[in-house]
Amino acid sequence: MEIRNALNQERISENKTSPAVFMKEMSESPKLKAILKLLDKRMEDRELLLRAYSFIEKDFSECEKPLSSFLDKTIETLSVKTNNELERISTGIIEAVYFQQELFGKHMFSRSINGSSIKLNSALFEVWISETYKLTRVQKEKLIINKGELTEKYKAMFREDDFYKSIVSSTSGKGSVMTRFNKIKSLINTYSK
Image 1 (cartoon, rainbow, N blue to C red):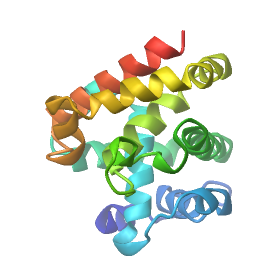
Image 2 (spheres, rainbow, N blue to C red):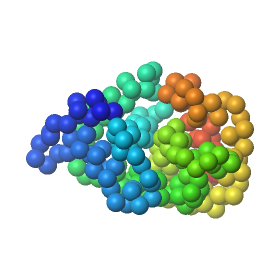
Image 3 (tube, rainbow, N blue to C red):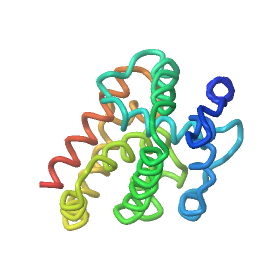
Image 4 (cartoon, helix red, strand yellow):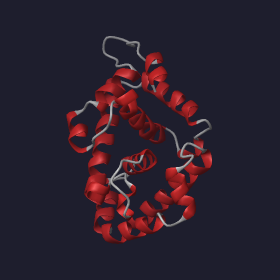
């Protein structure tokens, strides 16, 4: 992330924010910091947000190996966005984080929902944020209504070898990306109808 950040530093114009500045400002948002305890160690917070944004901007099926190339290409798409578009993206991502708290509480983005210790999992973060970011208000309301069933089905997914491996090992591989996105997307579709 440090190299990617350095390459995307330049200010595009007086009223246009650079991708690196946008990621930095979003990671420092008081609203985001109030709910997520992200580490700024080696820009891990920005990397996490970039991963989520990348899957918002491009469908998960477009992910290529290595994931770093996919991230490099999608961070460049930020340079052509207007400040209003960037604000909508930032607001949408923050709203998606708050929605996850509403769904899963302290277990959001963590394997702890299935009994592990509470620790943010970047693979779960990117899939849940990017997929719930795209939902309508009505779809989100239906997920909340079906929260109990959704949570039980989600817990069961952690006992499936392919899903579990997709969030703990080789998470940047195309197969892992496809597995976790397909399974979470299916879960969301089932309970947001």
